[in-house]
Image 1: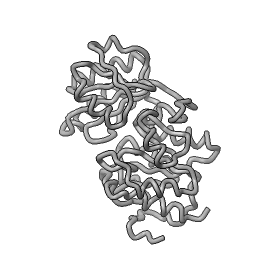
Image 2: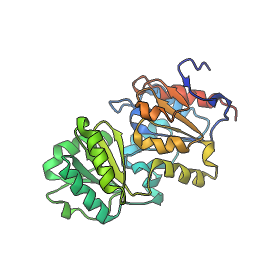
Image 3: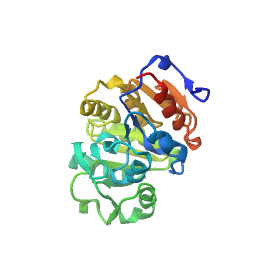
Image 4: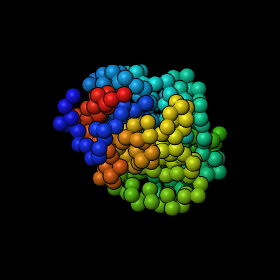
Length: 279
């Protein structure tokens, strides 16, 4: 096929077909409005190797995308804090954020002016006073939202905290969270005004190695695609990295191939190109 719409940044055309591709969901597979282009869905279903969704979303938040793309019954959720079947929610790997770290991070987000959401495996929890802000985020991915009056009413341990912040302050708040939580949590931006907080040993990069182990292949036999800072470790760990043109300059530093903008369904070009590589 023609590669005229791809920007090859290295000798990736000399590589073989990957054993699987781990692909971010929001602003990589999906457009900015969170819709899935039909061309992308078709290209995903036509892949001759497994497509594995790798997202900050929960398993519930992946149902629709999983169904339409024909993705593998193996997904990376919560940035790698949970790996398993998104339909049955049976885990192969799970590493929640410790309770004390989660409570500390929750209160810190509030102090910095953000709206925190606490994610369990099948629901999210937020403060009643922030129902509108957090509720808008939960609507994007689906799943139930429980509201409490005080953080002390939240039970269990979360797989992640999501901080919704003023996009104009995201760099400042992300840096502050990263500095303060560096010993107890991993902090990464996942989109405009969104900051993800998970267990300090969790990242999509670690998840790629876990997936390689599950599949019984070396990590360099896996391809990865993503657009945000929470995808960088995964892009670095993969044998082949694909980045849509809507990604930041920082993320593009880790790309072997840049495909067109997500709003143009650019990842479809990347999928079709991968399928033409020699086996």
